[in-house]
Length: 501
Ligand code: HEM
Image (cartoon, rainbow, N blue to C red; front, side, top):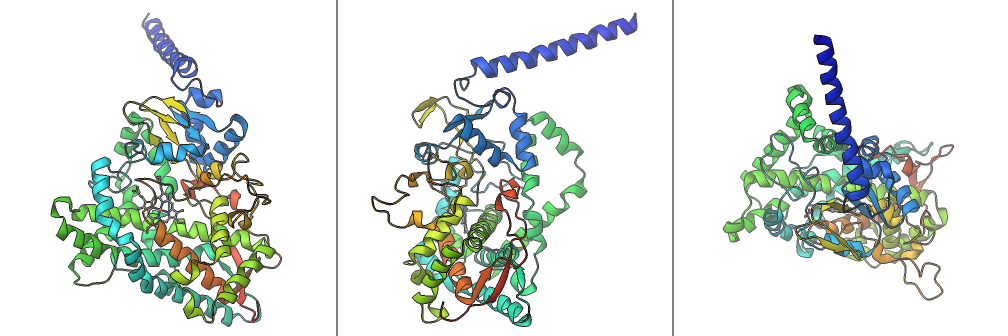
């Protein structure tokens, strides 16, 4: 009798659960406000196919395939649309009311203060005001000697490596060397305290932890199931958070040391402190400085490494384009000292090669998720209700045949001035915003361009860079994407630049 009652109860619970799932599926497929948009039915019915691809590091690739199949607007989960229609850039990212969905704007455990990424509208505007001056043209001019100090060191160390191995052309992993450089620059500009990776030729533990973007995605995936997220946070042992603790304590220590130091160095802290003095009503607290400096150091390092490594990886497999670029750089200057932020700006092919590198290897390739604000909006001509998630995936947007001619090929020429005979006249350049735009657009864009141009120009001034003999270059798209590229080593053969080229 008892067994029968238990059996009936289990069957009743199972039936209720099944009916609940079926009703959700029917709602999502036929009655949801997004049901009129195309996309794979399984993705429209459930969240898990999206999360599964995301956790496998293959989401941006799959989203591109879905755009190829379904068109410029695709429903990639029950509540989310992905756009590769250029008009969507302005409609989504120029509106300050569009915030990141809560799943993506979370603060790590133990962090109370918000940063630029997680803040609401008012705090975000306050942070941009407090930090903005540190990224102005004037500030960047003052910061150039600090940047140069690390580019000098990069070149010196690479020269040493080449000279010590004169007989066999040494192979170096450019990802590693570029990471050393970009992290050294931004830690010095951010905290006044460099990680000294170039000097030590190794990563600081802070970097090793922070580059584990896969963990960030696991946290975001859990956030789609709040009950599960609470359960996991409850059972997570303290030992699993040791790395995070190290990151937080190092960041706190560095900010505190910098705050005690009396200096006029044009680093970011100087600008924030001067803002705090002149606008005490909008000032930034110490906890906010720590949270924001961490965000800036991550945002301003591995993005640059991706852009530079992606461009170099394409150049070594395109000897003609490499030769044009090398000629442009080596004929433009009398000496290496003349290679500066200002003097590299007019080098059209240098800028074009970097743009094309970032088109094929956008440093942030994934969907940049935003929630539609109160009252709903029109995006690319479609009226959408509040609360749904929308976003543009740079990887799919920049490699779409609808937006670019021969989208899978590396063609810097498409970014040079075009006449009416240009085969790239039909490129929709308005589709291309690797730094995004609007209130949450990249704060470090000017600084990024200085580092991109100066580092690439000085590398090619000093070295011939080629595919190592008997090896295949890195297949860039074999890499997983966990929000950013999960970069594999990108090995190149280095030799001192041959004169006359
Ligand atoms: C090639 C290099 C870079 C690329 C392609 C890039 C791209 C981007 C993109 C696409 C966003 C918007 C992300 C989103 O909305 O989810 C962003 C935001 C941001 N970037 Fe960059 N970035 C680069 C370098 C830098 C550098 C050098 C810095 C600073 C030193 C920096 C600081 C930031 C910050 C602070 C944000 C957040 C802005 C906000 O939410 O208000 N980035 N970047």
